[in-house]
Length: 99
Image (cartoon, rainbow, N blue to C red; front, side):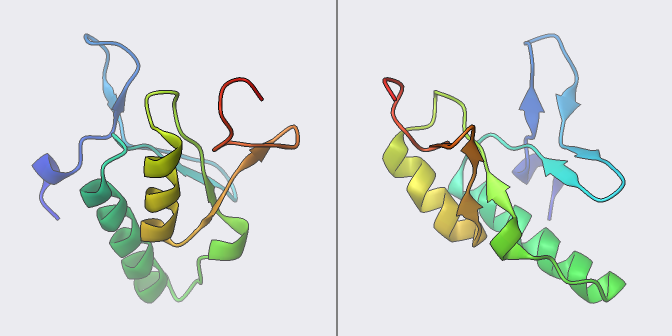
């Protein structure tokens, strides 16, 4: 993976790029929401599993999207990474704004 292929996330135009946050037993990975970046994320998780001998539980992993990502695009990206969508307070993250 080349660094320019993965853009991460910026909170503001002048802010730093955030690619990930690591916690004791959780990892948050940020991206620009492109299919290419989701393929890179999937590959990184596979390489991590091979390198560490630890399995990523894709059934317990999920994705959240900003309002800039359409419902249709979100559904496609979930399939690319191979995870389920995330629920927040019982509402699917892929739900339309009025829900």
